[in-house]
Length: 111
Length: 114
Image 1 (cartoon, rainbow over the protein chains, first blue to last red):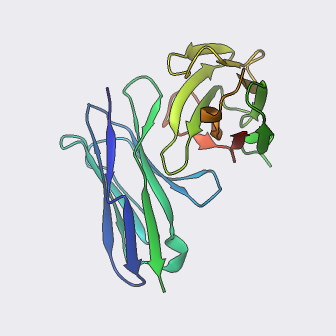
Image 2: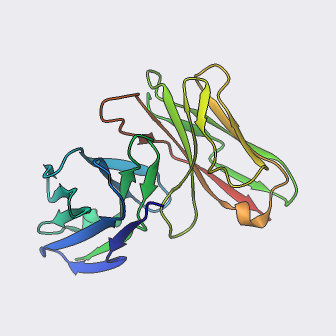
């Protein structure tokens, strides 16, 4: 069964610092998605990564995918308080369109 | 607003009662998905439809859970004889078939079973 693990689970960081969130998954998949969730809210799509070596950037966030290593990273550059949220990666179990979500990384950016 | 719409947003019920949630997807999306999210966890896939056909329902949590999409537009998720363990956020998402199949999520329906 496909398992998706994220680390760290909790991340407290100072504004202006850089950090990386990791998403590992256990079986072959070539589609990976990153979402943001604010408390009590639904999920907001951040990135769609569809092939090995894919890299997407939006503002202070950059996501990459290594399908051979079964690893995706979400890199945060010069964090600001507005980035405080929970970040989920999700893997599309190949050909099924079922998303298997990671455990989430709760990010808190301290002013 | 042309996003995914869910209602009710919050439902409080007593154990043993039946509840039904409705999801209206983005109008041009032919795929519709239901997930459950408990506190501190990621969403857990339950079932999905392509048009009116339910293509996957093995993840529905028990035979008390059922979902329909009778005309290929809105969908309902019903939970019969609710239990306290059913308390969770129920999320609906929709997507196009093919392409990136990127799923867009609604605001969710929060169920509290007393």
